Length: 64
Image 1: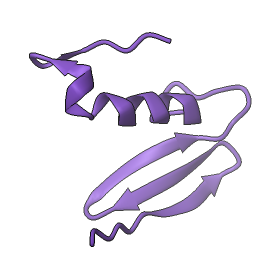
Image 2: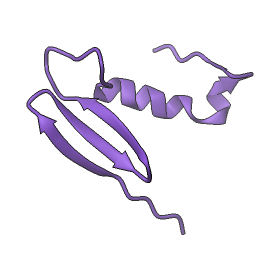
Image 3: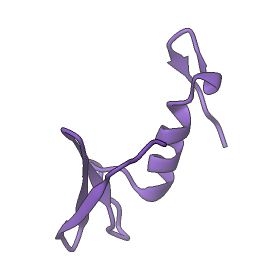
Image 4: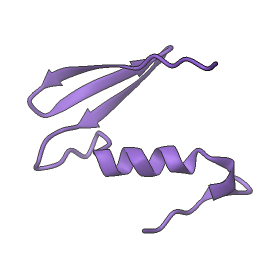
């Protein structure tokens, strides 16, 4: 069985940081938006883009 461990902590009133293994990503929690972080919808789209069935020869295009 696969096991996953992801940890998230709030950095300030504008963002959080999620970590797993040695990777970190800044998460946008500001209603005004941040240009240097993923918001929840962008995180979902990025995770879907990681599946091989959505990827063609290294180029990924997802449009909703």
